Image (cartoon, rainbow, N blue to C red; front, side, top):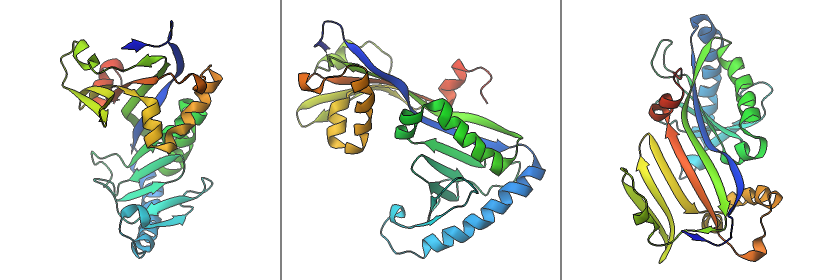
Length: 248
């Protein structure tokens, strides 16, 4: 790698992706809370299915399905084990209509990267737990399904031969934009490590521009035209259990 500064600078270290599941452990609470919300979601889903559109993203019904938690979109189609898919600006929520005692958790929550970045993982998780309490009662188990840890380093530039400089037992892949080397990934499945040009990603996806606010606070000077490289470790449930022994 090419070090463009005498001492590269860390601009941000944060959780970029967080996915958790929640499973009710009390049948009385399941019957009292989940069955009631599933019935209303079925009605909202039917309204979404009546909408015209060429993709699931364009077919949704806006409503306030959870008292006190604002407006969500309820989509016309579910996903996998989850019959109902909802989203607002902060989270995506997946709900299953599986019977009590099923292996499938009733709820899965995906935190949006910009929400985690803006308020931090603690505040974001507190918000979701308040919502989960209204849906499952107080007797449930939670499990982290995916966790991505990111560090943005200013003054480090990825070079073409860097992929061959890493000694590892994982399969690796290169990212390219035209003839430009923009990233490397190692591994897959339960663990993956990525190194890529974050500025190049922002150029291609302007919704990622929010990260620059923290960079500037930490000394980033865009006029210097130096690279910002992201180092990102992705852990899924199987790998996470190695580091969190009591993790379900």
